[in-house]
Image (cartoon, helix red, strand yellow):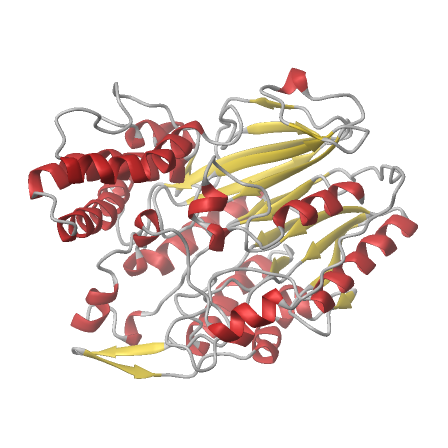
Length: 489
């Protein structure tokens, strides 16, 4: 949550040099890519499980200290994973996508535990495809927590990550990228999954904190483009999965939180759209949010205010971000593609876990507040703002963040942030961060974040009503029961 009050991650000198010197080629077909029809089928998505294990010191003072400004429910991570998997098994999708951050901090022991848990889906005949997130590989913070101290434990290299998850994308990939953990799979006949890796784990050695931003090297981008060329030649429809966002999810995100969007996102998004890719499934920012970009037939970018304003024959790309299992409201998605080329995206929330059979949604919401408000107050107090005024400012900032996590935010109060009766320092703090608050409430689309139908032929969309959860998924519920709790008081 500390990201709410900073302007982005600071890259080290080596990272800056590596990225700045890269020459990236985003060229794509000049003409229209023939539209490959998407096969009928369904798949599930969950993201950012951030799994951790009690035996690694959960509850120790040093562990509790790391959670000071964090809204992740690590204590319930395994139970949340079990509940989400139970819901997915009941839904019987053809396959499952997991867009990264499988572990808290890339601990090898936790990766092995995650792979064991995913075997339950594979045993049901449901393939699972994973990619790494910024927490998962070469992480220097792979620790066991002991009293007030930490002890380093083994993390995983890229090769070890692929070995552990060989049953979850890497073992049966059609093609692997030799320069990264990207690959191509064909989960349904005629449908290619382009699983991309924009993580900077090669920059982690020698650092005290994992490298958060995402970027493509020339080699990684050239490989991705070659796979899109091949898909075009072979008439395959393509969906993309990656950890970092591709389309800005709220106004100001690219400026305030650049580490959550892949570098060179705009030419990259245009390239995907020119190759006929219409959807990319992402995670990382822990929010339920759907954003889109559109380009007119002449190549100019258009910004439709509603679906009716999408021009005919437009190229388009939807970035469907799925929130974190360990962050309120613990969502997962079910996606269905029908014969009319409509993608039906539906969302469900974990509302009951094995270690808390009652009251979990309220607990999760309170947990999120406790992970945001005190830290914001602490930072504001450091600027010399009084505790009362800091609290007054922190509450609406926290409300905006939590509403954005839940998706489809509706402002329940009369103001997004205080505008009167503030000290000069308080007014300055609000003026510096009001764009973030406004952006999180307004979002990128007219709020079709949880349940939306996307026409894969036209690029138009419609917000829909929540659906009944899968019959056997007693531990999940449609999102209708939770977003209202995230609105401002």
